[in-house]
Amino acid sequence: MLTAPAPSAKRGRFITLEGGEGAGKSTQLRRLADSLRVSLRARDVELVTTREPGGSPGAEEIRGLLVTGETGRWSATTEALLHTAARRDHLERTVWPALETGSWVLCDRFFDSTMAYQGYGLGLGRDLVETLQTAALGGFRPDLTLILDIDVETGLRRAVARHGGEDRYERMDIGFHQRLRDGFLDIARQEPERCAVVDADADLDTVQARIWDTVAGRLGLAQGQTS
Ligand code: Z5A
Image 1 (cartoon, rainbow, N blue to C red):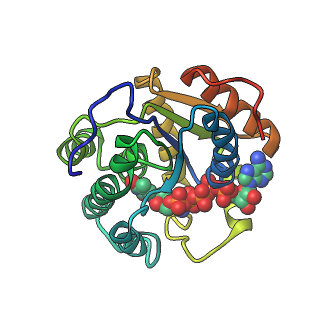
Image 2 (tube, helix red, strand yellow):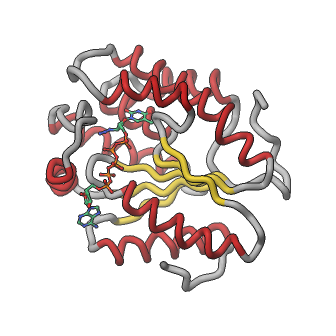
Image 3 (cartoon, rainbow, N blue to C red):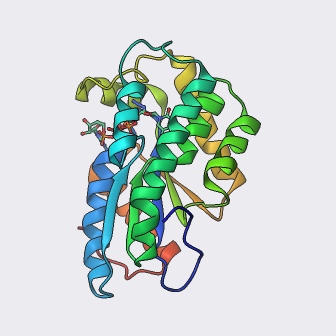
């Protein structure tokens, strides 16, 4: 399968989670996946969870080049190309085949991260990032994108407390993190039908409930399944 499956009643839904450092995406993705599996089981539909950069063997190899090493290791253009190359492989090998069989796919980051991090954060600009995404993906877009929003200081405090080895982006300066938060909010303003901003500055259960209400409301799922 080398192209995006055409929209149809059978095609699964593609949901993406986005946000800056420490927004809680990975934690909330696991919680949302549990709720979605319960809801989709009644329809006999599978849920696939995945992430970017990564989500296929080749894209995971590219991930290693992107999330470790010196902050200035790549130019903004090279970085956007690497993320986009990883994305194409991830789509061809993981996302599109799953959607084609009717599975739903829940993905931790997608092309809005390239727009926010490389386009806004690193200053590449919207036009070049859009051109790259169109060339690599055609018109393929998520059915729903949740943007977890949190103020930069709180998010970075959470990210630093968690700490692992993949901290190349966390070490970028505070101005970078502010530009990418503004970028995500700008994306949401420009595409309100696809994107929903969720206030992530609350305890885990409250954020989880906000996310579920948004997903259930936008995609017509049964309410009340928050765990
Ligand atoms: N990147 C890019 O530049 N361009 C692209 O096109 C793409 C990506 C696709 C790797 O992504 C990097 O790639 C990423 C952007 C760049 N930058 N970085 N770093 P990643 O998604 O793998 O990395 P991440 O942003 O660090 O993801 P993460 O692990 O999902 O972090 P998170 O959103 O901060 O989530 P978390 O691990 O769930 O939460 C962080 C900590 O906060 C953790 O200890 C939690 O227990 C805690 N937490 C979470 N929620 C709460 C609440 N509500 N209260 C208190 N504490 C909380």
